[in-house]
Length: 344
Length: 151
Image (cartoon, rainbow over all chains, first blue to last red; front, side, top):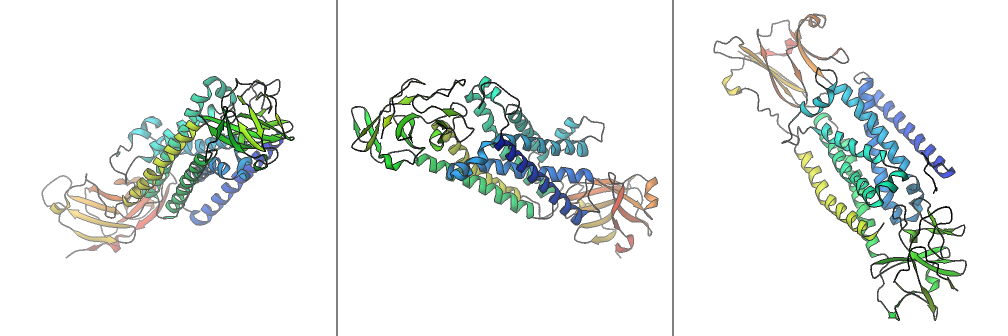
């Protein structure tokens, strides 16, 4: 979280995250190149090895990136992986770029036709899957990944607006679908072993399964079994149902409300972080602030405002404690409105 | 994630859960079990002049056209398995050194049927060399003595 734009917002956690990521990338490349040299040492060129190693690395990283989101929604233990996913995504784009550039150099730059023209004209068998020009799918995916990497910064989030930015970044799913078939159709045309097809199938089913499981679990969260209403307030739960420094999520009248229990007090704010719509109810009360689990944006519990110099604000809601039951008024107060916390 | 975005995610992944596995299986099933290339000539018109050679990787047949054309012979190449090379040129010659001065008779890509015109029939001492122009190496040699003439 920062009041000004910086190229990269480093902190200790992000540095650890990045060092682990780079270590694993080096390990992956070393193992891949080592095994390839042992198996095909006399048949494989340096360029082919680079194309295969970085292509395999990029598709593996994309699978991991796409698994982090649903895993974090299914189990809070995975939230630290979400914290710096942005760096993982940008790094994945660079790995995919190396694969793409070397592929174009090796397969399309040795003739007298412009390599990009050659990419689109050397194979036009679009009507058949067995001979489909799979490289074109990879090219368009790389364009999407470039747009995502280039705008993967809070400057663009702020200036494009969260809605446009989020829509742009949802294109990663289109890129993923195209990359699955970029690999699949390439493999069936060029590879003898079914191993890659099997691994790709397992990866694809795991990603789909996790997203469906997380999506349908999230759909059930925060809805009350029965809605008891009195004077505009709705009964939610007892204070014991909420862990200390954590929240209870409740959806009422189209509002998503996070009721936090902290320092023997209760406060309710809108559930969605102003940064990227992260779920604040999955966050914690840390150092006197409600902290978004996605990227660490913070809000004061009693007024839903980020502490100065930050300017983000979310709506607040009135609470009552009657006979040890928490009641909430789902009508939001304007963003940043201070409401006296309920004392326990 | 706001509720509308959650809904959009569920919709996208529900569609993916149906479409991607179907396309995946369809792609796998589309791997041709028999080689097919619609551009090749009608082989039924061409008598076989050699039995050819067949192994796990290739089937090679030399044919002769009985009508009088400039080009009377054709080398038919059926690639059964993907060739693990970035580029493949076909040369005919008596030995590897011999092919340096010759033009390739054609190029192989992925699996499929290929046919190449031959001005002269394969000679007794001719071998077929598959050459990678990037690595500048012959990676596959087919000895002519393994091609058996028919009676």
